[in-house]
Image (cartoon, rainbow, N blue to C red):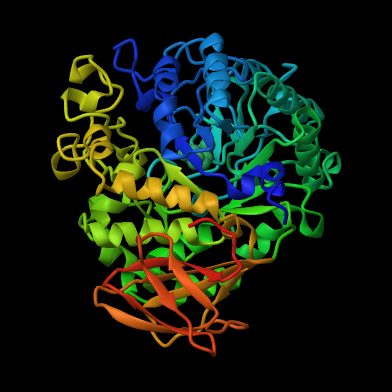
Length: 560
Ligand code: NOJ
């Protein structure tokens, strides 16, 4: 890797920050965040070190799934601003060194989308075949629904034309019929539109469901025999239109299956995929104070093409899904981090943010974020993680973690000057509420979580080996410690993390090193470890301690 490669394959060392415009910053004080407010906050995000914004859906919506039910692929929800405000945001972000990607929600539309309105109005509608219909009574699909609290079938009966339509998610989100070439063309056209307005790619919602063909008949299937060819088409379209745009796919699948979505050896489908398996095993490791589940998950990650990348994350806007753990493992995580039924969702996840799950323990919290930024891959933050925001369990379902951003200790956390009753969503209360957790206080405090995350981002950006190198574990005797190594050419970094509350000393041996080398801790000033003539060092760690050790030799020209 040449350093200039990090600019070409920018996503491999990016810092992605996910936010919803409606809960980030309300500039016109109507209680709803807006594009103007977000644009005003770009300097904050640039200062934090973010390099890529991921916008949750901002198009006109029926709002039955917080925007993931779009009624117009070419519009901007008027409550958030105009298309002009969107362009101003993208342009200003670019000036501040940030790219913008956005959710691409094309598995389904809203049932209020004009296509579906037409499709359900008559069997001869030109849009009828945009969706998936059946005339006969569907089988029991209750075990396959995604939201079992609200749905018990993948099919909904529609009186008007006396037929059932297919919906993978809520019944208000009819699935588009991907076997229809007209639908596929419409998707490309919508993508082209937003790319032309400056997006650098998309977070692709629910990818496996987008290309699934459940419910279609044999004739329809015949016109879509290679679903992955369509993903290749999307990727090359983004490449053609932008040069370096990306597709960051949501595929919560076992690693082996995820490999196919990268496009196999060619790496010509999704550019990046979230690593749900590592994320779930991270929680198991945290619950047990044992690094092995996480290590196993990382070691079993399939190798991917050089242009492809894993996206790592601790939390996102949905429930913390634990669906890929075995039931007793899931129960361990529930017991450790969400024992109350009200904290759990769908029998498989937790509707909490990380700090309350860790009882606000600052050492443990920092250790987890240090781990996130040092794991191989590209870290993705969910807004407010940098200050340690909590959830509001009084809010329904997954929305508990989507409360307004906390800018100040003032009313509404400085998110809006509207009356609290007019806010899009109530702010978090209690120990994690704005009086205790907010940007303004933390920006003025060099010891804050915000300052720490900023340091992590700076060090991560200065250490491209974290995004580029293969993962390898460094042997050491403690189960509760993860020591790993990222080596690329002459760059070598050894992050060490202690998942237990007790301090320890970690003996590490680095191949090919001797006493002419030493280790510099990038997270703690003035801390160095000498190596002996066989490349051995003794690294002390506090309880929940962490270090990023950069290997230096006498000739090294890397800056501290
Ligand atoms: C996945 C999104 O993350 C989730 O929030 C949404 O409800 C479903 N896809 C349906 O779009």
